[in-house]
Length: 149
Image 1: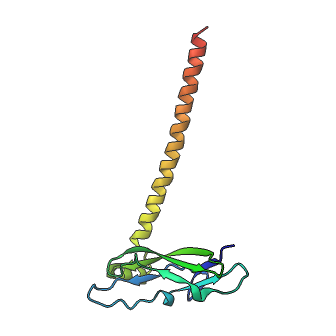
Image 2: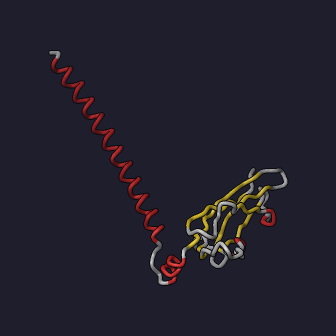
Image 3: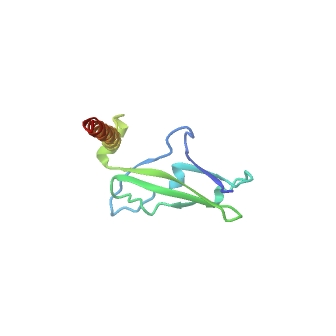
């Protein structure tokens, strides 16, 4: 049985575990440490804590460019069973930092919602299209059947 792995917010385990950080200049050394933002709890199939074996893959994170970057955390137990989980590091531009500090929502969040809404509308339109096509086919079959008599 695979181990379990959970990613939690370090300050508040009930809060969103996805950290927000300010982008740094490409000239600056990145001093960010993922373990300062999230707590990863891993247990093997017997319930023993194996959190000390967690490995982070943050190779996709570019701290010099604003954006949302996935981070994978993985753990392997003594039987070589492995589990992974993901969280997102939100790298913010200075303007986005000011927005967050003032309590305003990030534009990226609204863009994500807009895309999700557009995809939902697209699914609804697809379903309606299938219903219309089905109704037309039934209509043609009925017309053909009635026209035969």
